[in-house]
Amino acid sequence: MRHATIIGTGRCLPEQVITNNDLASIVETSDEWITSRTGIKQRRISTGENTSDLAYKAGLRALERAGIGADVLDLIICATITPDSFMPSVACMVQDRLGAKKAAAFDLSAACTGLVYGMAVATSFIESGMFQTILVIGAETLSKVMDWTDRGTCVLFGDGAGAVVLQASEQKQGIRSMHMISDGSKQDYLSLSALPLLNPFVESGEQKITPYISMKGQEVFKFAVRTINDLIQKVLAKAELKEDDIKYVVAHQANYRIIEQAAKFAGIALDKFFVNLDLYGNTSAATIGIALDEMNEKKLLEPGDKIILVGFGGGMTSGAILVDWT
Image (cartoon, rainbow, N blue to C red; front, side):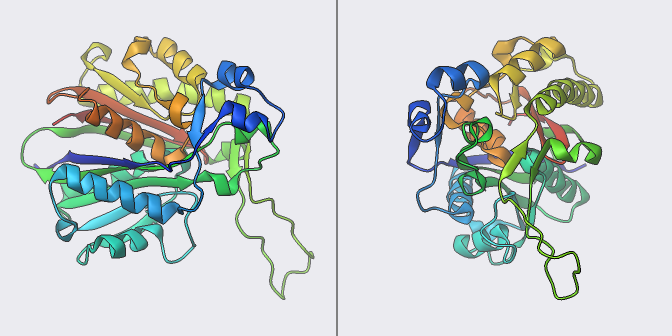
């Protein structure tokens, strides 16, 4: 049986660092207020790079780490809710810039769970035998969909991209188990409107759309804590493993309090949860890829280590992947 293995990781973050004190100069907040509620100290904000720029650089880095060229890619998947345009897709833009001439390319929308969903789709393609090598990218420029007068949201988010290269292997390693689920009944917990329905045949008149992220913080918090635990248990059961077998949990980097409570609820030591949200904030589909590349760069992962990637996001979407690191 073919298995999907991670052979490379990459990330890209804008150079501009925005601290909590910087935000306090444009919205009513403070470093203490943000840090105590979220654990975030700073984030990266683009001053010119769009989603495709960040995605391209993260993807290029992942290919370099994998030691392969873009010419071997069969597919590029980009997970994003902040594309440069509705069409062409960010994935197609990346394909062109990388020179991945034989690769198919498409975008995927699953909000903060995007990279996990993308990796699950890629794994299924690889296991089926359809594709051999796939680049999956989570990339966002959330700064363009922020209401910078709303301290409840603008202090949380940042821009960035994270990427992984998956490749087929005949060895029993790599992606061990996966689980994805969605709950559309909770879609108003976290939302971002698109274009209004305006055409000559609409009789209701002008529809006003606010193109900013809207969030019910307490509802998202409760959903996330419960969901992280449920997903961890499901992928452990599918892989026939226990909590003690896991070296790290790489959860979506949304809020330190969420991670803290989820660890407690799941009965897993907090120090097994990798955290870097203090540096980058919530970069939506990019957080897990950024974290994974940082861990890889710091040599925190060794062959045989078992890690769980778990995400949750608007929709509400959620998913987890258990990886036997190679």
